[in-house]
Amino acid sequence: MIPEPYGGRLVSLLRPAGAGEDFSSMQRIVLNEEESYDAEKLGIGAYSPLEGFTSSGEFESITSRTMLENGLPWSMPVVLAPSGSENESAVGSIRAGDEILLVDFTGKPLATMSVSEKYALRKDVFARSVYGTTDSTHPNVEEIGQMGPTALSGGIRLLRRLESPFSRYELTPAESREQFSRKGWKSVAAYQARNPPHLAHEYIQRITLERDDVDGIFIQPVVGKLKRGDYRPEVIMEAYDVFVSKYYREECALLGSLSISMRYAGPKAVLFYAIVRRNYGCSHYIVGRDQAGVGSYYDPYAGHRIFDQFDVGVRPILYKETFYCSICRGMTSVKVCPHPESARVNTSQTRIRRILSEGGEIPHEIIRPEVAAILSRGDVTIS
Ligand SMILES: [Zn+2]
Image 1 (tube, rainbow, N blue to C red):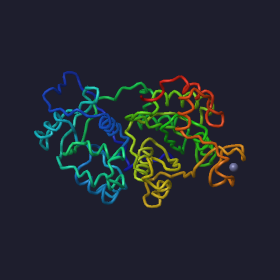
Image 2 (cartoon, helix red, strand yellow; image 1 turned 180 degrees about the horizontal axis):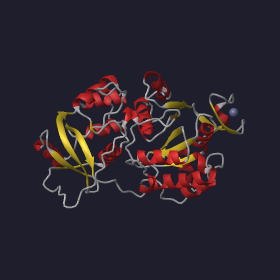
Image 3 (cartoon, rainbow, N blue to C red; image 1 turned 45 degrees about the horizontal axis):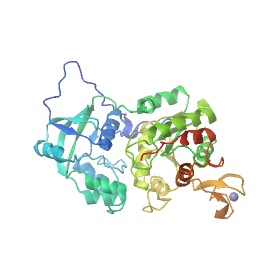
Image 4 (cartoon, rainbow, N blue to C red; image 1 turned 135 degrees about the vertical axis):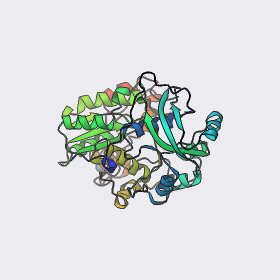
């Protein structure tokens, strides 16, 4: 069955401004890109049961027990610790009980917040507990370092959705649930992506779709804040759109996007993303090798084992490393293929980018021609 939202109720905090409503006298905080995405996701219920930014009590509970104070497993604090001199001076004069305005990274009012608490952010605890390291070369630990010293917690009211070139893919949990039911799906596997599809991704999607306990797959690339070398979100979504409509029956796949910052926390991120997908209506969550990992910070299969420790009401579908084997003559995995590593075709994004930058043609064992055509256009990554 389509699972009920995490915590039992889909949070919905979207209340557009009424005529004559005026926010100009409120203290304002300007959110950065990640914080803007988080405010919006809180508002549309993607983080149900959360209704606002994390309090000091929840922070303590999440970082010490991987649970909310009410005992529900939860691995990722959603912290608002505004940075920059103007924000920090505004935080200095904000008091608990104040109603403040949150402005998004493009300068437009996004949400209001009833401040319930102001507390000193324990950055080392955050980094060590969630990311397992305080090494500032870890991209998220570096971001924690750049956060302000003081966190604000409190419930929000979302005034509007964010706009982006991929807005039409940004379904709310209520909308994805409605689409699943229109398709008659009773069980849906979420597939998380960060890159345009290649054949190792497709293989995992196909074998998932062949399972008799999965009616459909919800392909939901994470398209948050970008760093140099990342594919542009428009490119990822266009490639997936072309690919899904050509290679999958409409009855079995749905494409959406998820604009949140990528948390490279290995197992703790896997658990968080599984909870988020449950809110979108997914009963299953596909977990590959080194999911949500970066560098060599995490055991590549720690993201599989986290589900032995915590039950979040989503069934994980676990896959070992997959690849094209030239002796098997098809996609396979370390679980099945007996051949030497030298028979494997390297399908890594690093290799694909290198071939593209040298003007070469991507082998058909790696990528579909329709996707290759999009990637060969140039200007597909952030420079
Ligand atoms: Zn083989």
